[in-house]
Length: 99
Image 1 (cartoon, helix red, strand yellow):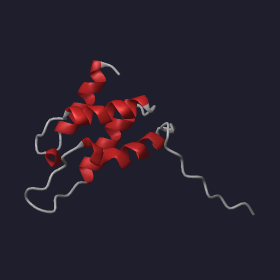
Image 2: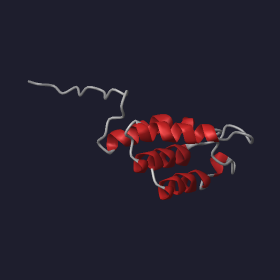
Image 3: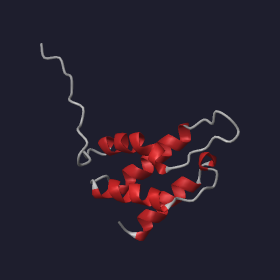
C-alpha cells in the first residue's frame, strides 16, 4: 500500500461529520491493513467508507462513527463489486433458476 492510498482513505474518513472529526486510530489502520492483505483493493475500501458514512444518520446528538470497523460490511460489498473475493470471505452462491 502506498502513501497516497493511506491519504485517500484518511481524506474520505475526514469528509463526514459522522466521524466527529476523530482521526483514524492505530486499530483502524490495523483493520485497513488486514483488508488490504486480504486482497481488497484500496478503491473498494474507500468506496465502502463512502457508502457507509454517506448513509449514516445519528440517532441522537452525540452519536457518531467511532471506528472504521463500522464500515466493514460495505467494504466487503464494494470488494465484490470490484470483482474480487477477499481471502477468507465466501461469496454468496448465485441462485439461478435453470428451467
